[in-house]
Structure formats: structure tokens, C-alpha cells
Length: 459
Image 1 (tube, rainbow, N blue to C red):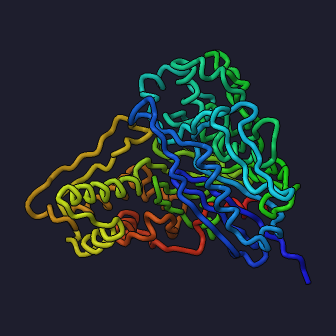
Image 2 (tube, rainbow, N blue to C red):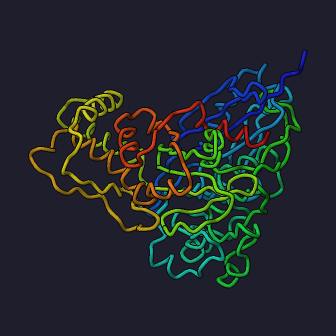
């Protein structure tokens, strides 16, 4: 009988951790777990800062893995990891410790005194004036607020003593890989490096000379390897996974959700979860004449053409919470699930067209960070809840279409859009808007799971 050989895939997301055990022969998930991290913590920058508690994220990782069947985990032969891009966590030696039982690690624990918070991709402390004062990167990619290098440069200017307290920096998923393998220093994939800014994807190197010219502590930057490479080996047996199991370098969650979803080169993938991204794969960097799309490193020296909006499911979730709060103030608490159910039903029944125009830039956009949300053309015919919700859903897709018009998809010979993310799969009003604005069929496949993609990427 052939010995089972599974891969553990892990996605360390903005709001939750998801893990799965993937069978590469059967091409199916044999076990999975997920847990909300509840890791957000207050920032001294107020609403402009966005920080998360790393030990809480690490705890969620171990919660998920520890609840997978032991008889499955002992057959894991590789581990793939991905996570939220752009963010940065700093640490020094002693940033984690092992908790063992019967000679096996049952969990790792982050030690807060030896690490910083995670400054996430949603951090907006780097204002336009500050970013404009920085040297231009030697890269086809720009550096925005929330990007690792931008956050570190802000600290260099405003909190230089804080940087001196730490020896290493990386994304949170890189930190987890460093911890699992007990690496001396972190190793980062080109996917995560490109999400930090000041990284040249052509020669696969940081812009060391440019960063040195402004006294950036370049010793904090991780070593770079190609996506799909192995970062190290599991340092100790972990909940039944054998010590010595190879661990892949951490990858971007977007790239991993794409690799788990794409079925052919004529597919574009639309992901709407916390934020929103529309992407397809090309062999080289092309000029589409549009400054709202980017070419991000993918796999096997290819690129993802991406329109990445900061406004997606988070905008709709804020609208739902607003309605809940209003009703609570009237003394009528309503479960979130009921609000969603009613909104979608009303949105589907709403008129096909409305004069109401919503600009959904609740979180701004990287190319227009000062943009705000607004509503125009309100009249007596469109103030019903269903009409407002439909207009909000339409506006999110219209915003993406402004960033990546359907002509770009047509020029790339894209034949369909594959949907991904709970924000889209559970919302038929959004789905209708996609087909309306892009004039392409929207389909859902069995892919879409970034944890599964992380497993596939290390096969």
C-alpha cells in the first residue's frame, strides 16, 4: 500500500488563519480548519494606524493545526505558507518559545517583549507629502502607505529609536516560517518583497544603494529567494508533523488564491474578501496604458496583472455594521447574518438602474489616498434600502472597472471571470454587477482557497 503524502497549506490573512491538508495526487483537501485572529490592537496613530498583535496570530495558527487529525498530520511531507501582503513586523532574538509535551512541540508562542506589532497593509500613516519626499524606487512598482519599506521609512523619520531595538523585519507569514524552521534570520520570497516597495523584480534585489542614501537600516531587510523555493525545515515535530519536514518560503495570499483558482490562461480571477482584486497572468511586463494596474511577481517567472482596490468586502461590512448600530440605537438588535440576508434579497429586487451614484472610497485608494466616499443624485425614487445596497454593490465593481477596464481584459483574450472570496460568492447583487460591467460570464470553481494555493505552490 502506497504511503500517503500530504501537504499542509496555511493562509495567515487579515482577519483569520486558514489551514488545510492537501492531497496532491487526488488534488483534494482532506482536512481543514480556520479561526478568526481577533488580533487588531489600538494604534498611537489613531485611525491612520493599523496594527495587529502577532502572538494572537501565532496562537490562531496553532489552534488550527492542533485541531487537524493527528493521523493526517503525520503524513505531511511539506508545508506551504502564505499571508497578508505589504505589512511588516520587527523582532529580535528570543521572539518565540516552544511549548513541548512528550518530546513534541504542541505550540509556539510569540513573546511580545521581543517583537513589535504587525503594521498591516491597511496602515495609512504615510501621507502623500511623506511618500513624495522619498526617492523614487528602482522598480516598475511604486511604494505606498502600508507597504513594509514605507512603514519602516516613516519609523526612521518619526521613531528612529524604535528601529534600533530590533534586528529583523519581515511579513507576518515570513515570521511564522522563521519560527517554524528556527531560522537564524528571515528569508522572503520575491512576491512578498515586491509588496514592500523598493524591490526590483527584474534582478530580484532590494534597492540597497537608494535606501542607503537615506540612511535606511538595510540590515533589517530579509534575504530574497524565488517563490516556490524551500526556506528551511521544521525544527521540531509539531502536533504530529515530523521534524525535518520542508517548509516553503512564505508567499503572497493573492498569488496563492490565484494559483488555486486559475484553470487556463483565458481566465481572469476576481477576488472580493476584505479588499478587492482583479487579476490575470502574463509572461512579461506589458504597457496597458493604465496607471491603476500593477505587475506583481507570480510563479515560474511570470507576472500577475492586478487591479487592487482597498475597497471591497470591508465597505459592505461597514455598511452592515452601520445599519446594525442604527437599529440598536432604536432598541432593536439584529444579527449580522439577518442584515446580510435581507440586504441581498432587497438588492436583487431593486430597480435595474438608479440615478444614485456612490463613490465607495471609504478607505481611499493607493493611487488616490485622499479620496473619500460620497453619494450623489439621491431622490425620492432611490432611497429604499434595496436601491441603496444595489448602488453600493454596483459602485464597488464600477470602481474596479475604472481601475481595470474591460478593454484590457479583451486585449488579453480573457474569456471569463472566475469568482473568488466570500464577499463575492455569497452576494448575488455583486455578481450581477460584475457581469454587467465586464460583459463576461462570472463563474465559481472549486479553487479560490489561498491555503490550498500555498500547498500547491510547494509541490
